[in-house]
Image 1 (tube, one colour):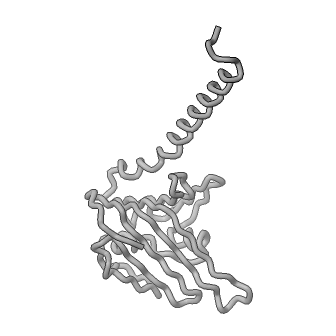
Image 2 (tube, helix red, strand yellow):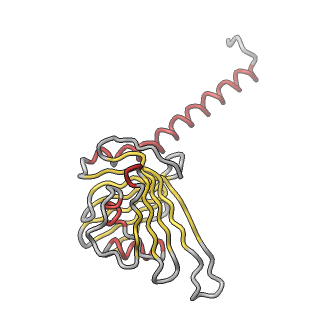
Image 3 (cartoon, helix red, strand yellow):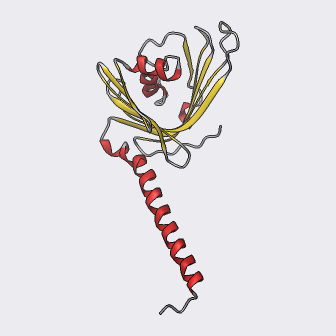
Length: 191
C-alpha cells in the first residue's frame, strides 16, 4: 500500500505522465534541428531569416505581409535543403531541391515543383533568391543573375545580410542573421 493518500498519489502519476509526454515532445521536435549539419553538405548555415513584403500598389486592398523563422540551409545552389522552424524548434516547412525538381514539405502536405523559383513563387507569391543565399551568407556578391535584387553585405562579416527587391512591385526585403556556418564560427550581431 502506498504511503501517500490516493489523491496525492494520483497527482504524482499525472505529473509523471505529463513530464514523460513533455520529454517525448521535446525529443521529437528537436530531432529535425540536428539533421542538416550531419548531411556532409558542402556548406551549412543556421540563423534567423525575415521576409517582408509591402502592399502591392497594383492590387487594390492588398496588404503588407511579413514573417520570420529560424533557418538551416545546407548544400549548394544546385542541390540542397532549407528548413524553416519556430523559435522552439518545430519545423514550419522544408524545401529540398536538385536539378529539375524542388519539394516543399509542411506538416500538412508535400508539394513538388519543377524548380526552386517555381516553388518560391507559389509559396511566397514572389521569387526569392534562395540559391543566391549561399553566396550572400558567405559575404560574396552572387555570381548568379538575380533580377531586381540588391544585396547589402556591409555587415556580412558579423553574420548579417540584407537584400531588397524594388521591381517588380511590391517591394520585398530579406534579412538573414547567421548564428552558425560550416566552420562553427559564431559571429556577434544584433537585429
